[in-house]
Image (cartoon, rainbow, N blue to C red; front, side, top):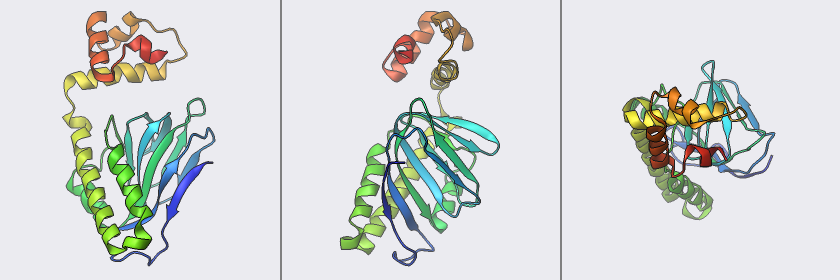
Length: 219
């Protein structure tokens, strides 16, 4: 498994009951990547840069694609793995503290695991950079990291499933169908029928959202 990781020991950060970074890093493509935690002591927050993977959470599998963010809370079993055919690259953080649960509940994020198409890579990258400078910046770095964490959680509220527009939900259903049937014969008519649209409507909405036609996405 190939990773770049920054690790912090217990007691290394101030105010750890409020917010503590256990680890932060980048995972590079690896078709054997798999993580299992029982009754996890950390919240896992990850942004997928490229590739695919899946999460098993609350007795259900969730697909994870480029541009998605997933959040696994403290006190729960964590099981996630990379696709063997298209292993993911992702930037992530494992964090703890009262702030984590407070934001999840306060922003109403407890019922959603995967947040689709979140343009949050710059915030994750900034978080990593701040942690890299912890030795020289100390408390200032921790304060900045906690503010970035709050901003990431707040931004996730914009991608809650219940607030998505109907068109975005429709296009996502098309993409999920493609992902689930990628090795089968797919036609424009088959995809359009999944969402009760004409071929031209389905193609137009898909291209508006993803910048390419369904055919180009399949390729």
